[in-house]
Image (cartoon, rainbow, N blue to C red):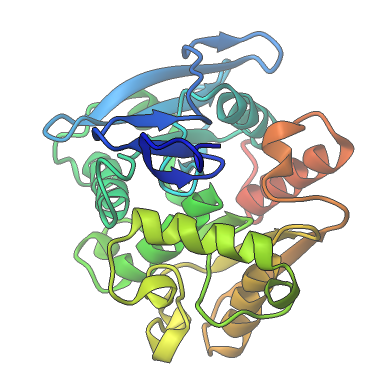
Length: 325
């Protein structure tokens, strides 16, 4: 940690440090692995630039063997990392998504949005929205040229998914798309939310007694989002002063996954409960995983509970899917 280092101006433990000369040192989420063929899962992946003007890119995954007559669901995925670390090439995320694709038999587009503090919020949301627009360009015949989407995707089966900060992004995109022109052409069937990153100034449940982790999460948000509303900014607290009407989610199904030891668990459960009571016409599911902490599946992808969670997501993405005859 850099608390005693006079050259460090901000220490965002355990993610990064900002030095007085402006240098940013990321401590976590810096490793990268190339795209390609994963022999364990027989999944293919490749990197593509989707917004040349900003450099926003993505890593797209598909099963190695897909029958020509078969079209697969598309999962647009947003990685976690508190909006300030990790990329689509981070090895743990790459492994996790290979396993998800293999289990679910879907195409995944993992969006590499830009990170704070170089690009403070709401840049990550705008980059992610631009990625959805790019996906829609393949539906509308407006220049979408990615063959893996054109050849293998059923655009009647599009899902949003993400973990932590990525689940937060998925929520906001599903709200934004409903009344947009984009929503007239790209239908989102469902959202898979893994350990969603929601928060608030006034502590609830475990946050009241776990002051250390409460302060950590407070500091993470205040670092990435320059807002005078702090941890009650509607981007992080969707229920402050009625800021977000979750009944307006533009999808039919939502799966919220929380973990027993996660400091964010109670916010995830609150989101599920508010959604169920909101008058939203879709179907909400809650999966509460005992004995595990935040994004445990990223760190222990071969554990029994991680595999069980992946199977639950696979079932969610394929529910109601017509078989190929």
